[in-house]
Length: 437
Ligand SMILES: Cc1cc2nc3c(=O)[nH]c(=O)nc-3n(C[C@H](O)[C@H](O)[C@H](O)COP(=O)(O)OP(=O)(O)OC[C@H]3O[C@@H](n4cnc5c(N)ncnc54)[C@H](O)[C@@H]3O)c2cc1C
Image 1 (cartoon, rainbow, N blue to C red):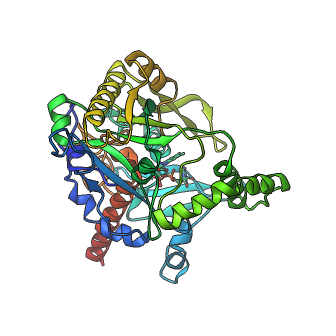
Image 2: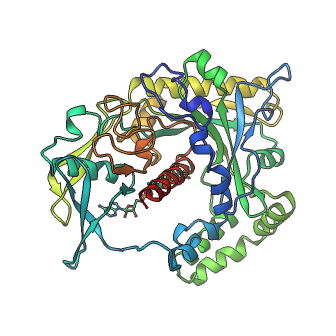
Image 3: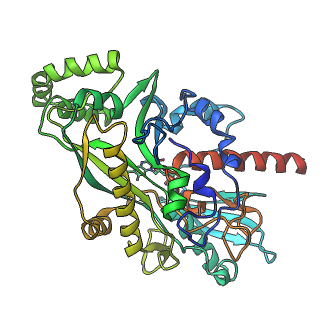
């Protein structure tokens, strides 16, 4: 979890014709509440002094530390179990797939039909409806709702489903001449109480605007290593997580990994870091926000239907020349900054890609599951599908909470921003319902 920065919502540093119709604090005002909910500590996210330049001043890349909730807090249904089960809690229907949407002639949402595999169906009538089906499915459901109403609500504005983007990521450089212990202390996963944290470097607003870079970040990760203690622990953990019992050979591997495990325990409790696996190489990964382009879009499939006879989503998505260029330029800037800066005594960063290779790598599998843009927020219906309160322009009592409402991907993973958006929408709906009562 990591909030976006103000620059991510400002007029775009790369000159893209796109705007966020809200300011960052409309969402980050919920940050403390969200941190409390997930049991996160309240430590800072931004560390501008982590990587200094040759003159000792903050460089053009800022350290940022994301927060990971404790493992037991990562399942939201468990986290909120008491609220969910309480008398005042919500009613939840499982195995109920929304398949039909009914608007009245004044384009007010009145009814949803939900179906289950066993043939049962449920109709829900509500004063307000919020679609929260994930970025791709929420878009598909709105396209479906529009089709069920002769494409007269969203289709005329030609915004719904368009401007799909993802974050694009690829390994781009390798650390050489490493002082491994010191690096492990700097970039290894940190433990602060029950909160786990990891480091990335984001270009400052100044660098982005000066060079016309989009948002992005670089992080240092160890690459897959030969089998050893780390690998053995991971396999056993995964088995236990799935409710299985480790096999005898997995337990033997664990025993063989004991020397590394002992060291790792020391690092966990004394250094408060996750120890790198034996023989790990350290790679720099570049992540950038992809340019939202109208031709990158979600539409309804002409042929493929789900089990309820509704068309599936089809994704038209490609990585452009600009995306490759942006990722390469940002990487080069980072390599130069690191190698001249205050952390260069820990290792040198060696660029390991050309612009062409990087573009190819991003095209072949650069997406990292942060889809967005296809129900984007805008100041009016010609600029977006939902307004700054996340209500659709077409149907005033229908809202959407999904990363699809974010006009751009920003410089951080999206889910913290998404949950803050959900809290904002919940506040608005509570106030509305009080006014009605
Ligand atoms: C491998 C992976 C790693 C990720 N890592 C990170 C990360 O480190 N940090 C981060 O910030 N984000 C990460 N993300 C992104 C993150 O998972 C999403 O941002 C987040 O889950 C979106 O939440 P959501 O509630 O909008 O959608 P979802 O989590 O997709 O939930 C949508 C729900 O709607 C239900 N649904 C769909 N259609 C219907 C329908 N017709 N009727 C009824 N119900 C329906 C689905 O079953 C699902 O339960 C990752 C994603 C992936 C895939």
